[in-house]
Image 1 (cartoon, rainbow, N blue to C red):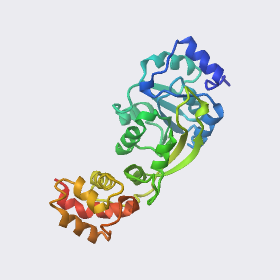
Image 2: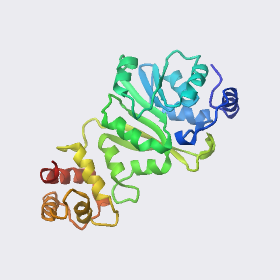
Image 3: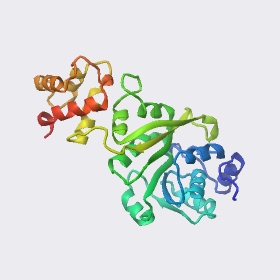
Image 4: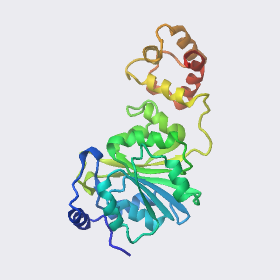
Length: 293
């Protein structure tokens, strides 16, 4: 068994050896607690028959634990300075592919075909850079990758929004976008003390699991998200007011919006945050003919 990368002493040794300095712009916070890492990996339920996709491996702290558990790990790293570090720290493992790429620009499906095509069970497991957590999640979901789900660390506040239920303060268009595709639950919370440098906020790990069958059927997914974003534009406003001000030509089409709300069985004086995904789906389908070019 090799010495864990993720101890404070070993992490400092590696950073010193390579003269590595953290880039704030890349949201780099490295984990220095092997127990937290083991815990994260355990929530992904991986076996040697599974492959893992990691985003932002840093110096390989989580990558190492994934490599010990999964059959193959594909890690996307944007920071070129970390490539030689990873080559060194992960040298004991022959089942890791490091891809030097910005995950937001990468063709993840192509990489999966090239590196892990033999695996039926794939999980995304990552300590996500906090400043781009949402765009990364949305990209991975929109691309409908053949994955079982994700176990990802993020700012606790974002985790609360993703897992929120209707009529709570945290519930919003992000909750809907993610829960439409996956079941979302907070697996664990993580104190800021287990990172170097310490972030200013506490973190949480969420587990996202693909729905076995779609929880709602909707004629146009993109339009569903347009309607939900519009409905939360100003949280204190009624759904009617928000839709009028946010949808193209909404003021002129007030009667059509009212009609759609009535047909969908939604009181126009309700606020967006009280609607379930099912209600949003019904509303989007009613609005679609009048607002989709």
